[in-house]
Length: 426
Image 1 (cartoon, rainbow, N blue to C red):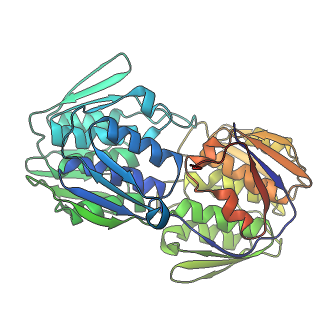
Image 2 (cartoon, rainbow, N blue to C red; image 1 turned 90 degrees about the vertical axis):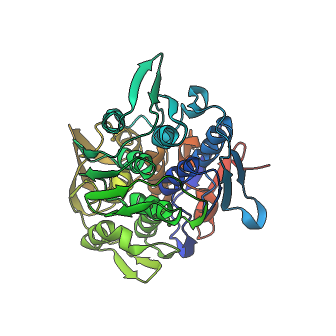
Image 3 (spheres, rainbow, N blue to C red; image 1 turned 180 degrees about the vertical axis):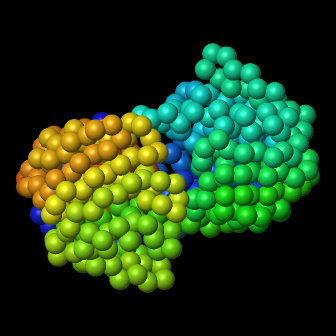
């Protein structure tokens, strides 16, 4: 099992490049189910969840090619035949995004059998809103032995009001609606850039979609979608993680190939903390000189401060002067990194959905355990400024969503290495 060894104390200097967004790539790969034609996706990150999605699509009968060499960030998908429209548990047990094939399978094949999703243990992400929406569109839903089965001769347009904002629910029903008979209206829809990315891809396939990026999305169903060539957006969470890496290390780091517009809430909060950010069209230069001030933050849906940046921000808060109160409003179990940060010397107290961080705390190296994707990133950030050599175990969590993060950080001066089998080595 791979581990990271990180020796702290080096400021990060130079340029670091952001990969494509995993949380855009996964629904866009699922959208390839909606057509018999070839779909080419560019700027695909080489992370474990993408490999899992490849296996999932291939198990259904699709032909999937993940590029290597000069085409290493491109995938070609062709779903000419869906011989087995089932998302098997043994494939999807490590990935929450498995539910994203539910809508497109029913829309295209008239039937879907999907294992109840797995993934990070950060809290409940029930798919009842997916199922409620599909039922409104005419699907019959049954559940037994850990699988959900949905059937429909042809889905019908429907007016769907989400009880709460759900990103994957919005994406799943958006895909289903593209081939439904009539118009669908999705209200209280998620506004995340990943939803907008998926909608842009579907539009390039011939879908008729209005309002993506707002709380109300309208979709006029069409009889058929065609293939496309589409480039995935940069990963805003990876970009945010690298911005904090530059800030916490007191470095001078240029985060390149990103979309600053997608990071406005993070940028404003870090500026409040005293971080100097020079924002360009596709890059952000980070300078902090180690002089950080405490600031409270609450996670909310986009365009607010993202829950996927909460753990990384907490690592930064340990190095800020004063007291920061961090409130997690999205997932109920997303403070699992607190105990590990505390082991490194952080002063953090948790009360329900809020964590009080008192800084600046001198951090020292320790053996720590990665519990989920973003918690892993926070521990890497803390290790960059800890005294001594920190060992991070179970880094397969971070491999799910960050493409060779240790190589990228080492390229800008971090002392970090991987012990064990290198992910992606062939």
